Amino acid sequence: MDRDETPIGGLAAPPQPTRQLLHFTIVMDLAAIILSLFISRWFAIGILLYIAASRAYSFRGIRLKKYPVVGFLTVFLFQGAVIFFICYQGAGRYTVHDVPLLPCLIASFLIGALYPLSQVYQHQADQKDGITTISILMGKRGTFVFSMIFFLSATFLLYLRFNEKGQLNLFILYLFVMLPVVLFFLYWMMKVWRNEEEASFRNSLKMNVVATLCTSAYFLTLIILNH
Image 1: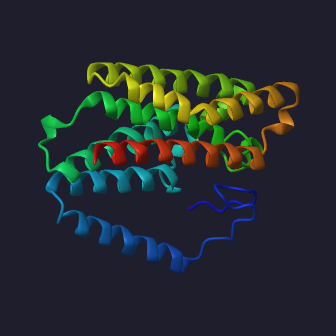
Image 2: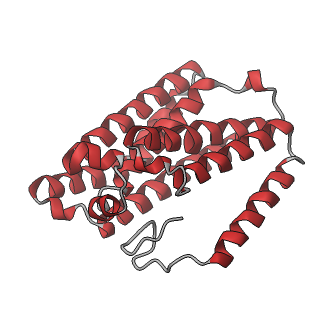
Image 3: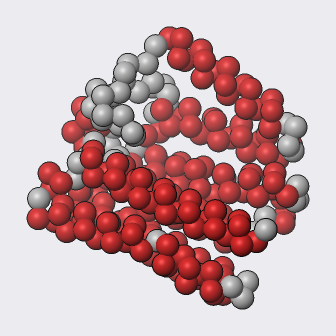
């Protein structure tokens, strides 16, 4: 559905999608739904909803991504809370009522903090395609303020979660591991404040890589400590 000619995701020069790619993605979607049935009914329903939301986000006939608030909330909900919900339920075979809501919200706020930063360099390309993203709505400087608020909110919710579990030592570990993310974010934000041209694909990719590596390292550490 997307025919980006400018950098997107991790690709500086994205190739144009083909009809074969569309067929392949449909096969992969069906395989995902079928395989998820072997985990649980709720996991399969979650996968189905996630795929439906993802397709509605990009599909030209619906194109949720062209609406700044609706598009953002689609990503916020489905790439955050829904993914956490089905993984928690599927991995532990818990009932729906056993899944804690606070971690679902934390997952969404973490996604909500990073997602607008992946759009901040695409304003011209998105507007050419008739899309108004949350980053366009906020402006380049406003995008950084928006992301900072969501990251601080996620951090506060994590504090509440770890305090609730009597594990504040793990929260302190989180602050330590995520320090490179905070420092790079502030460094990039100051550069954009002086020159909005610094809101570039290269810097966005660096932010994404640093955030992904640090977040993954932290949660991998938690898995090791718990087992």
